[in-house]
Length: 215
Length: 246
Picture (cartoon, chains in turn yellow, orange):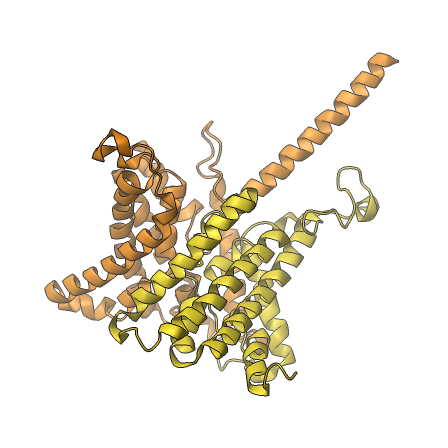
């Protein structure tokens, strides 16, 4: 691509796979898992983080020469909190039901370690354009995992995707249900998210053995 | 008294910070390699939650809620500053953590040495902000219960990190498949422990009061059930009508 130099493109590509924020850097798990029981919530959460991280990284990067090192954590928290308030108010105005489902987890984007982590590790030392790409890349890497987990949990747990009954109707016994298929209620409960992420990590690390941890 | 006991057990076991709502997972995974450090961080979390939740309860009650400003005069009764709660809560937490650090360093150097490095970490621990946000979402009625909620959810978090740290110390001697080593197996163990903790869910529902609806997942399944019931009812009504028509 002529638009992005190779180095810049890597800023986006790396976090998607080999340096994924969730499975490799272990950041931002807190607010990620609880809302992945359905795909729609996962997608909205991913978009919210994309917005907050992309814009936040640029703001911090622009301010990086002004912020005194001693109070930088507070400054970062204020920037994130302001952005999250915007997301929260927009969701409340245009998607009230969804904002009820996500409840406190939108607020918890503030303490999402991905955001503070990228501010500290990248935006404080790089220019706005690179920081923007880095923010987008990391948010996408986070979003990809969220969407994968949401996809499997909703498909196996409720037999739906985005609320549409893709496997047939469990009450009327159509589609897959007519041959005796049952929804797996286990996928709906919170601990299933952890196990799904565990399996994603397993798959990823068996494909790329360089990522395996020393015991 | 009874409501205190109920909230206490509910926050520790039923709505466990780690296993039911996944709060504080980052530090839970990062600092659980050794039992001794896990104990330090757990103690710091109990302490900070016990301080910040009641404080944020006061802020919420007298500053943020709709009509909370009425103590300034009747003309302030219409103000609703709820949208400011994120920024105020996180500011309170960051300042309190800083303050607690200074006070502990001054008066108890030994405690400071054991908690020291963990205190700043805690400012961005989701469990702390989550505690305050859940306190607000559940509309906890008085400051005593808020204090109770803060401390008991801290204890729940402490239990969780202590358990996983002990398991991880043992698992070092086991033959885990290479790609699962470290993070992967920790996730799966946490999931299994979470399933175990789900069994506490029935503990407090013996009363005739319905279980609290604050987990998104339980709410969904409930709604699903309601929808199914509605559909069934409609079907019944239709067949009933048909029977009458015949």
